[in-house]
Image 1 (cartoon, one colour):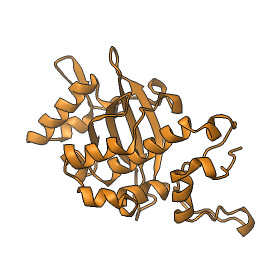
Image 2 (tube, one colour):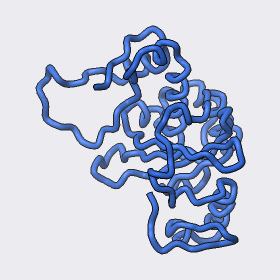
Image 3 (cartoon, one colour):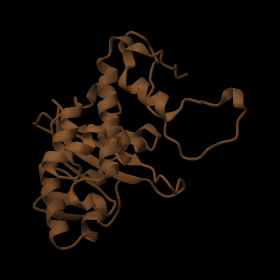
Length: 224
């Protein structure tokens, strides 16, 4: 996820994305990067982990705290009906993919990165979102390279948070940890391929939400 034409400020190397910013937005991004100790947009997959065990323990209150109290991106009323949020629907629709984590050196903090597909333009380059959190789940800061993400929060960041929350819940579920190869996270949908009806996954968004909300009572689908 790195780009060329990097720059260095105060011993921290910044991405081309940083160079494309200006004014207060650029200064704020620099502050975020300093909290991480590195620019997330320069990380290579080989430097990160895709192991669920390395996910921060994000829970619903952590999401509310960040989206409502820290950033005012959503209201308390909206979070009461979070399943109707665009961010949650991005998640259950399978737009979140390539979730990776990177532990921050000499810290209990974890950086989480992900790519979120455009809901209306499946062939467009996915957006890149990331957030920094304590291992306990407290979200410290987040960013996305969409226009809305410049203001600390957006639907793509929200979708990544919901995905990590679901992953953390799955990991802690006895049902999941005792059965090898069980996973119901929405798969990344890049485009819809042709296939016989008998091979189609016909799980509705409503059913998928129930699976995510009640993992202990739903038979999970094996991944070969």
